[in-house]
Image (cartoon, rainbow, N blue to C red; front, side):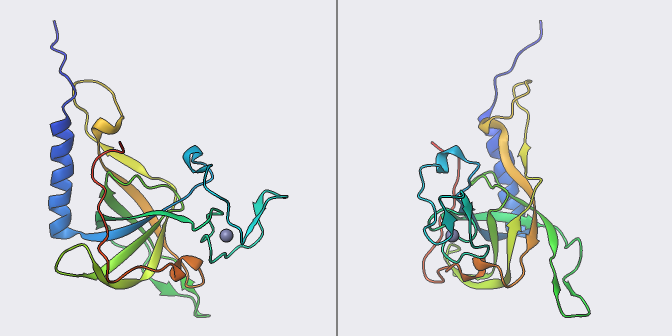
Length: 203
Ligand SMILES: [Zn+2]
């Protein structure tokens, strides 16, 4: 008779720990801007943006809204978190066309399991952190948006197919650098206050 093992949280925790260890060597900490999303039912209670949301036509009337950063929800940004990340080399190097237009750079990035990221969330690279490792001192000049293709990094434990929180140790995602006219560049990032890291599944 086969031995059915129980799922083992410590296996997931070990994989998550190993990722952070790797990121501390070959990666960096980044700041995730988790946005309100129309597709997320939990966000439905959030007030719609009073600047751009047209309640009659149920659409945003302003494409580059500085109040909600295009999310159509008041304030736009739900949470900001720090996460360890490992970036791949740019798929196309940063380049400009003959007319001086910026061609967005695409990259793949690995992140911790939490916070869970969604398409249209934003990612900010930090070039220098304070000694506390939590307070950004200097930001990389580009802002990135999560594009499609966000996948969970999982380990299988307990000899069963499960893709619940107990198996997630990280995330893999594609990001694109945004052109400077995007409103998210106006979102204020504090260079004085520490940013929290979100560890573990939501309670
Ligand atoms: Zn708006």
